Image (cartoon, rainbow over all chains, first blue to last red; front, side, top):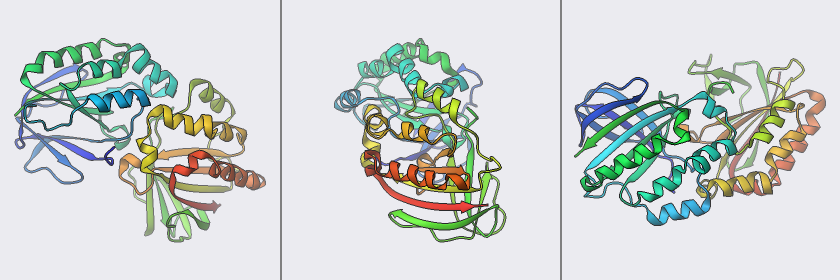
Length: 182
Length: 182
């Protein structure tokens, strides 16, 4: 595992990723911007931004050893040349979620919703990186960044559609869906 | 559960808590200060400080529902008038710990080390609040604040002694022990 990495997703006029659209899924949306820049650490983005979302990579919260091994064996990293499409999906979960004990959250997350199992079905096509932001006092709890090739675009729709129909998603009270290309 | 609360422990010349001693347990210590001030949110402390440690309360990471119910039934809050003694114990865990999957960390934490079970034995005498700081880029991963009455001082020594002898503590690679009174 790489050390925890603070990442800022900077929406504005600069950056390699063109923002195709920003869709409101649950709750308020974010203002449309032309470009997205991904900035590591505490570096500042170039140019003026309309919004900045910050998150940090962290340890696994629900994944068990067998699942972690299967994920490692199948997944590929970010930045593959053919991955010219991306999505940034910020979500926030309800207070009811955060009040659950660890075993209750694990049961909803995997035994009821198969969050890890569904993700595995789409590897290695859909690469992802999860950033945590609840402890940072940010407006969202998680920022998930996905990368994939144009020929996998429909598979990506299937992935998000399936996740959004799970019992876990009943605990999501804010979600925005940002689609990008380069 | 209260909303996540950012807390700064400010070591310097100000504050209600007198710092009795600062002991190095594992790794480097912190400079001795006279007083500790506990500041909520992003407020600034009063006066000049020698060090500031920040952490945020968060959701349970290992505690299961039955354990959570037992903790809630037995524990008392911070700020009891008779709790004139306190300890702030910052710890950092090794990369080996953070690379473990969730089920592996739970097994070390509770099935092997009885971290929750040991804590329960000392309730309600020893009140505590855990603050997370790994995601904040802080030098420690956790700051635990304990409060107790002078007649429970020996029990507090028993508690920290027992925790430090567990398999979980083999993953602690930095620990400082700050004792206070008011």
